[in-house]
Every structure is written in C-alpha cells, then in structure tokens.
Image (tube, rainbow, N blue to C red; front, side, top):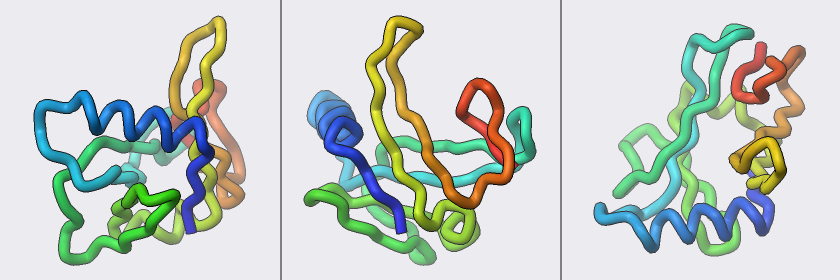
Amino acid sequence: MINLTDSAVNAIESAMSSSTRPSGGLRVMIEAGGCNGFKYKMGLAEEPKPDDTVIECDGLKVFVDSKSCEHLFGTTIDFVVALEGSGFTFHNPNATANCSCGKSFC
C-alpha cells in the first residue's frame, strides 16, 4: 500500500524519539486543498483510529484513514536532504498532476 524509504523511516523514528508526546506511528492522509486539488498531510499519532488501515514498514506503523487509502495506494514516501531544503517527498502513481512544491496533486 504505502512504502517508506530507509531515509524516511530514519527521519520518522528520529522525530518519534525526540517527541514529548507518546507516538505509536505515523498518520498519513489526504485532504482537499493545495495547488492541485488534494494535499498530503502527515504527523505522529499515538494510536490508530477505528477506521484506519495500519501498515507496517520496517517496524514502523503507518495509519491511513479509509478515505485516503485509494489516493495513497502504491505511494512511496522519501525523506530528502537537499540544498533547497530537507523534507518528505511523495511518489504517488495515482497522481495525474503534481504541484511544483510536491505537496499537492490531483
């Protein structure tokens, strides 16, 4: 369903270990908005919600709500360190167009 690169796993585990709040995994979801119609949203979560799909990647749990699953199927999340800035990138085979910022799609 969703794949995480080693770089993304390391970045998420680092965020989880330095968080002051307990976190059981990463929540990834799609919301309406952004430049192209949908935008990615992610953050640490204590536990899954009742309608979440729970995916395990290298021992890390990823929580995805039922509405976002169809948009995220086959997506690879990476963490890139670059001169322009560091951050997560999404390689989504379901996107027909991407914004230049890489944070929204349609």
